Image (cartoon, rainbow, N blue to C red; front, top):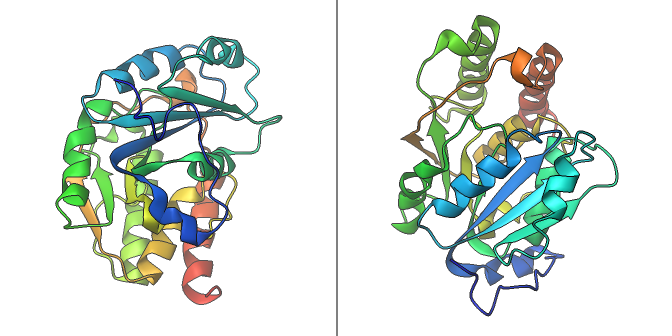
Length: 250
């Protein structure tokens, strides 16, 4: 599947909120932040391409040093994949912001590059958006303590804290699958550079009065020894992010 003439080859950078309505109707922008994923990135991109939804794929390499950049350089002429390189490692949140600026689709999904999340879930995640029932959709992971008890309990706590602070009644705040109507996401002034993207965007969506719709997804957790990069200190950052956007930030 190739991009329509209005979106192929040239990817405009939206400079203000007024430009956010310019998304290609019905199309999904898949934003993939990548850092040192040479073992996974090619496989993931093939999985994303196979999903039968109209889409563009935006890969943001966040200063990889393990051969990922070389793999991605081989995709520079693929009309369905746009590859953007950061000159240094800036963090997942910074990579996502870069991807958002280049997205032209009506919808935007954040896709982790470590094969924990299955792109085959895209159609079910998009359905509430396409039917007009939601502007924000989160994929709910099954309760699987196999991802590590501290990680499992930490995610549960973040969900409880989010519901307590914002009254949003969701089941999985820390999920990697977050899908947005582009016109909404491009209006949100995101600032976090690392993994605090998730609590920040959740807090700001809730402050805007948006209801988060949830859809069950599949999930294959990767252990820390296999390259998982999130650390316990990122959990503390998430807690602080939820607190400060509830009490200290407009």
